[in-house]
Length: 390
Image 1 (cartoon, rainbow, N blue to C red):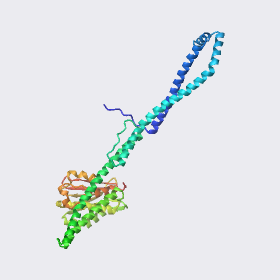
Image 2: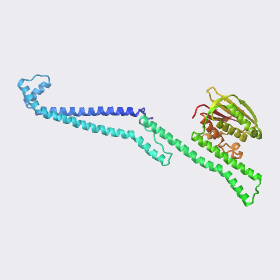
Image 3: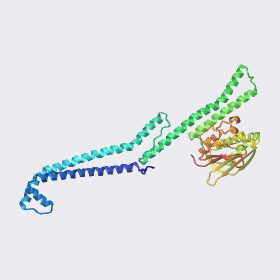
Image 4: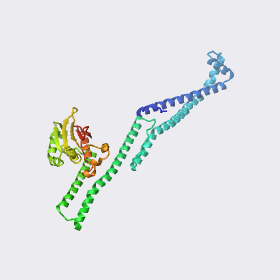
């Protein structure tokens, strides 16, 4: 059976409710105590009266009028007891007030501990985060104020984010070491062999080593781009540009690379003006063209499109007839070193950072990276850009 959950109220509202209840409870307890003691005093005084005065008091209580002598005797005894009785009543008010205050204080302490218990759990969990245990979570309180419930939810989200970041950092460190190990090993081995005289120091070997150095440079630059994206410093200077002109310029500069891959390029570059960082847009488009040359050259066809959408955003599309994306392409969202299967393996020369860099550039422009497979075969990658900063 599902437990009923009371709706959360704000801390200010709960404090006002509890304070009001405590005041009413204190006044009520004091009134009950004083009323009981007054009844007790009345019975004691009645029992202590002489028979004639007691009969007169009873007649007055019943609404009857006693004779003058009995009434006079009653007043004489009551006047004699007025001073001590008033003192007892005042003392009873003080004692009952103190007792009701103590009772309300105990109830208040109990309620305060109940309200503060989630904060104690949060403190312990925060100490766990401080010590590096990012798996700690705080159970959602069954009954709590709106602020405490929101704080618990925010803390758990923060802990989840830190745990995810820690896993990514650990994976990225291993991936960086793995990516750098191969070219560094080749460089070290080749240079050592040339020094030992095993390999001749000719232009071919030096040219191959230069390719390894260029690969290292690409990895370092891609990692730098991703680091700037994490620090939200990737897009430095925006200016009004026509994205179609930027793409046209990149296509012209990449023509030798496209020709070498035997890709027939089609272009449908419609005017699409937007405020963006032109160098970063060129970097993203060039990365997509390099991916196409590396993975889709067998298709022999490439199409570039630019378009301004109705919502004011701009989209850059790259379409090819290559093998397309594998089923695990969603892994790019969590793994910047993502690669697909055999068609997109290390043998093609990629670092696995290309799409992550493009995605970072798109997000830095308030947009997103969209990719998928075309129904007629091949892949489609689209960069959406907006005028809004992230």
